[in-house]
Length: 183
Image (cartoon, rainbow, N blue to C red):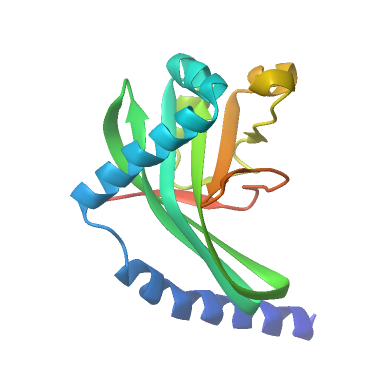
């Protein structure tokens, strides 16, 4: 039990020390707005089926640059915006921490589409929403011809993860805590 407490304490300090560095690089409101739109355009260009889902979505949360890094203990941080009706409604941050074998850093983009009003309202009314706890996010899977698989298309919340090379698979958003911020 004492070892677990020490590990949690070490994790807390590692993430706490890492956040100011990541937050210091946070974009201005105007930069973030432009990056949100560019990220969504990139997704739609790579996967036209995602554009069709986007048209049906009640809200789309876009994190253009989520930075993850660590040495044994890691953390992840990014800022983004919620689009409702093609307009930016509010700004959010995503944060997570992890323990395990890890070394290095990476950046990626995340797009989360809320397909139902109830899923969107639950998110909007939360004081801090955690993927996998407050709502399951189905990571988009594509079938033949680039279409979204039937199971993914039925999900109330659909996630897309992109890196500099394009759409990424076999990743998760589980454990990411998303909170509203002022910009």
